[in-house]
Image (cartoon, rainbow, N blue to C red; front, side, top):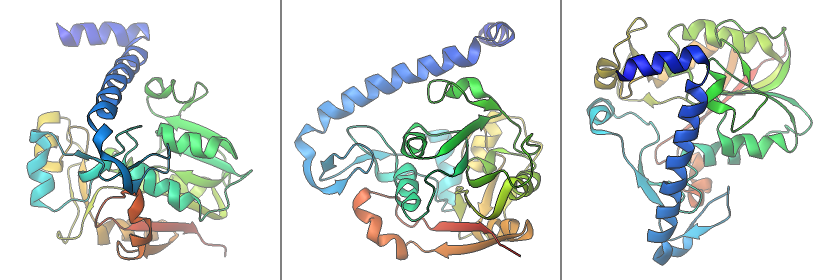
Length: 279
């Protein structure tokens, strides 16, 4: 019955907007509850660079039971742990890291492509730059940007050398043909352009674990730690994927990112500075 209703709503064009509204409602109640229970933790310790509030500790965020085993078995850095969510606005650690790293990039008045846009990151850049948002299922993101366009990351409709910056945070692990997606991002970037393409990754596995043809959500959770993922990247493999597409990649280690610790970024996560080299 549930799948039948879902198919009817999709065919009528209402499914994604209704699903988005439902998620926003859950978010509202979760945020309200969080603000109440963390009242006693207000104070110095961690600062949110989205809303400006400070707490002695942030809200923990752990994976669902069906995802937890794969993430633990392979020591995946995937956005979970202690001090992940700001108790006031529920911004997450990976958003706050990107917002800090954007401060090191001259993006004002530049052309930016933001894939599967996160609200907090979009709000940070849209005030100062010409931002195009895109997703394969844009209906999920209409409340973030009503002008979002439908795009397949493995075959963009954009011309070569169109953007100064591409942001695609935690998207490539969802895409079966990630090679094509990375090549497309390289193609549409201007020479000297940059990309922010963080992914969940492991430094304990020697090769990326993947099944590009998998369509079983339960098995995907069991193998890759989320019901819509098709791989767990080995960090070395991921960097090679980017370099093979033509990118120059510089790794900022977790130790180098300690200066951002006050923003409650994820422990052990590195950041990849990715650039289309001028030749």
